[in-house]
Amino acid sequence: MKNRFKNFFIKLKNYTFSLILTILIALLTFAFLFNMIVYNIYPGEAAVFWSRFFGGTDILSVYSEGLHLILPWDKMYVYNVRIQEIKPEMDVLTKNGLQVHIKLSIRYAPEYKLLGVLHQQVGMEYADKVIIPEIEAVIREIIGTLNAEEVYTTGRKLIVEAINKAIEQVAQRYINIDDVLVRGIILPEEVAESIRNKIKQKHLAEAHTYVIEREKKEATRKRIEAEGIRDHLNTIASSLFNKEQYLNWQGIKATEKLAESQNSKIIIIGSGKNGLPLILNTETNGDKN
Image 1 (spheres, rainbow, N blue to C red):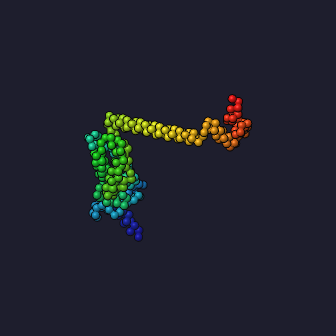
Image 2: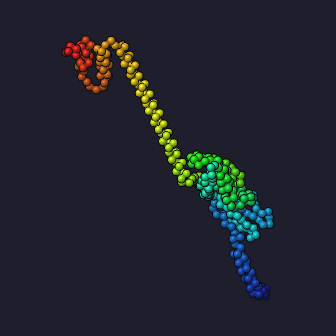
Image 3: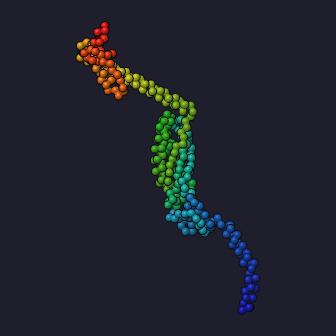
């Protein structure tokens, strides 16, 4: 038994150098290949696996967050699957050849379940290869049908409508477009100033027209009111025989209003046959005269 242990330690001593060298080589190889073997998938990321000897890109599986170990001759491609934003700017020409500067904001994310297909057919530069060219193409097309004033006034709405159509095309490339915003439409300053002055003059003309129409309606209202007063006076004149009867009638109306008032009052009744308030008693006034 002692001889066996003794022989084992003798052999171990003979192979110590080789064993240590082997371990060191293994450690150095692992350290050198660490980034090719160990993949950390962080929050908001996902990965596509590519096998060198077994079928290439795995389009059926998407590798989620966490630690993943692969063979050094294989590879993982890590994608950001959060909503991202790019802010492209472009110069386009209007129908009459005027250059317009467009500023956009595009929010997007890859289709998670189809990440393998996206990687195989488009690649990691899908924003530059698909999103920007598709949207830029529709913007150039729609701006090319407008003149400078139309771009300044209604162009934004038309651009958004065209972009919505482009989003449908982009979605066929396994990409989700969250939103596309038009941050700015910039015309050459002299053209923009000319358009602003034209729009200002148009609004002033509309305001002037409004004032004229308002005055015409006010004149019509006053004419109708005057005709109503005239008809009212003619009716009264035709129903009363003389001035005295007219004043008596007005006195009766005044007495009724005084009687309906809630305030305390003293009414002095005249001595005439009509018994009206003294100030309206035409008979009493006549007697004094």
